Length: 251
Ligand SMILES: [Zn+2]
Image (cartoon, rainbow, N blue to C red; front, side, top):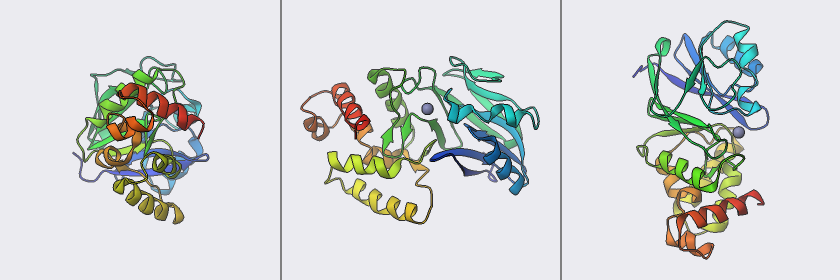
């Protein structure tokens, strides 16, 4: 792995993060919904764009692709199963990509649920998971079923515990507020609330988190636990997840 690699958030819109994977010369960006924010970042840090990585087709993730390509042709990686503008490298689970200029490798995971073709990029000890896993929460079910989303989240949950989790939105604090209604006595969740409230008070991102942090505090990864199943009066994981997602939709 390239020891000079950094991962920086480029804030966009209300609460999106476009993640820039870069060294001191080159950058790849994940889900560039806003080209202006990316171009400003590249110029400020004197970086050349070398690749665009897309997790799913929603406009706030793909809206900047055309304008970025107008500044120079670069490969556009994205889900094979979704209509991504200017997609040059359609990807599915089992494939790998190698970003030459950054000397970085990623493995592709299929994560249906939020959308049907949603993918994640796993590499450099990090997961770029778009709108599937959020800090202490998960994406809404716009296209897929609860069973698909639960399976996709389980895939992420099985990654090494130290994997850094780079989600596409800053939703963590409101997700923690919801999670505390389900597990008020969860110490890891209480500590996360304190730490992340402090970060947001100083305009800092709560991301990345890690798979270990999510396993300890994210209720959507904890639906197999009897204490959470008890909250929803069920004794199975899928029914708990389904009821939890529905409750969060209206929270
Ligand atoms: Zn989305």
